[in-house]
Amino acid sequence: MTSALEGIRILDLTTVLMGPSATQILADMGADVIKVEAPDGDGTRKSGYARTPGMSAWFLNLNRGKRSLAIDLKAPEGRAALLRLAEAVDVLLYNIRPAAMDRLGLSYEAVSAVNPKVVYVGALGFGRDGAYSNLPAYDDLIQAATGMPWLYHFAGGEEPRFVPTPIVDRLMGAHVAMNVLGGLQARTRTGRGQQIDVPMFETMASVMLGDQLSGMTFDPPLGPWGYKRMLAPARKPYPTKDGFVAALPYRDEQWKAFFGAVGKLYLYEGDPRFATDAARLENVNDLYVMAAKITVERTTAEWLVLFKELDIAAMPVNSIEDVIGSRHLEDVGFFHTVEHPSEGTLRQMRPAATWSGTPLAAGRPAPNLGEHSSEVLREAGYTADEVASLVERNVIRQWRP
Image 1 (cartoon, rainbow, N blue to C red):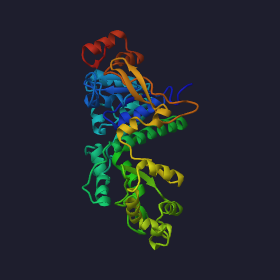
Image 2 (image 1 turned 30 degrees about the vertical axis):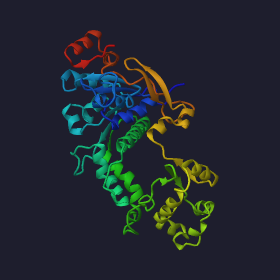
Image 3 (image 1 turned 120 degrees about the horizontal axis):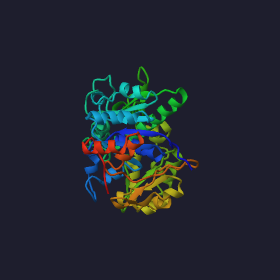
Image 4 (image 1 turned 180 degrees about the vertical axis):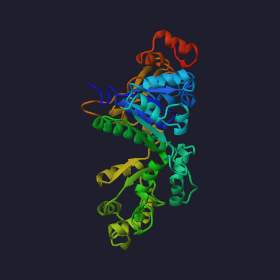
């Protein structure tokens, strides 16, 4: 079967996590992603565990299905080569500041001059016209700017802290990929390319405020900001006799079933704090506190059985080791092993979505630095001698096994 994005070629000038996460999604859909790297490579190549230098686990898990072109874009020959490649691509994606792209001679105006149909996508930190436009942007900084650490403090009384995984970069990767697909669809209708900016701050502000704007949605406000249930200090996994369990009694009948099953319906039924949906939401923290005093009386396994009987959604609180060893992930074939040309046997995750007609595929393993430099330039019309000259003058780097 063909893949959804077969025939789509993407010049990927992104580094670290947000951009590579987006292009890995697109590569899984079948796009030919050419990862354009500086001669010393993407910084994630050197981060964390690795069997060989420059091939870290982090890089391997972000760059499957791509080809690597290692090229010095500051050299005139390097810029010329990239513009030559740009003539026959569908998408150019970057995540450095627009001013840096201008200095490299790779602005939208320069690229669209050689390819008017290009979808030119910038994964930016902040919108170009705002007060923050020239500030650096990283996951932790955008978390802070959009209120995530502060919400920990507001809801739980603890010191502000970051979400302990790069949640912004991962969410942004999905948003960037969606904007690329939208740009391609618009080009199908109009026959023209365009410039698209996807700023981290504004995107994550919309994610946060979509839930937290609440009463301030209205002008004048009908009430304060804040999603009451999400901000409840006691909204956390319930302690059990031997660990924790995540459970979500939500509707009135579910709360009645929970309290009734443990012989304590009197704590809930008839209490005016929980008599209506609005009252229950207003006092949801009291419910969570009450439930936590009950869940410690049984084991996690016992609660999971009972919650299933009561039709109350529940899950164990897994460690990362538990997730890796998940029976469900085994059943759906989430992990498989691949043989990498330089790294040996690797555990690889398959794309999560399943498509009936044009299935996703993890494709080739992540590339070595400059593994496909010659191949990509030859496809653009460079001769073997011209490629050899660029290698000799350190304009491009070609990996050899």
